Length: 205
Image (cartoon, rainbow, N blue to C red; front, side, top):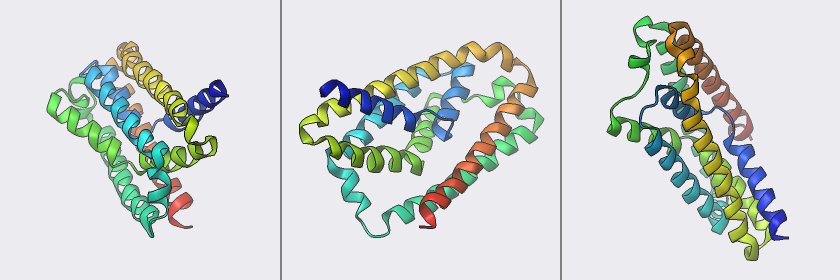
């Protein structure tokens, strides 16, 4: 039973983490430039662990029951995602920001500030980790909460280590300005679609 719970949690967490949202886009971009990858990966993992633990331990069901909570998070998050989309399209439009030195954050404090913002202000992070994963974990009972949490943590660690340190292998391809333009356009589109889907799934209910 414990193995089934672990594998179920591993799969569920992976399905929520894998995908190019604001957080993963920033991790990939910094990974390509090989700038401050370790603190970025550690912050992502720690935030994931704390949020998932809060959900598994009961906070997910509590906040989901608060009147208007999901609506506020949804619309505020959609506005944030639209701003990120605008920034990405602007970066793709301005040639001066296409080189690696201009597109990668090199200041450690700014990097830490940015990764915290794109993690904690992304509504999908809260909805997926605290609310969704927290609610699903209740199906397996309190006795299996520890095993379920371990499965989720394993998925988070594997993903962010792979993405953060693996993205550097793409660095030679991104020596071309056109590659940065393509990445920024892709990120802009993803942010825009994420905002639309967020409102459609949660804001119009």
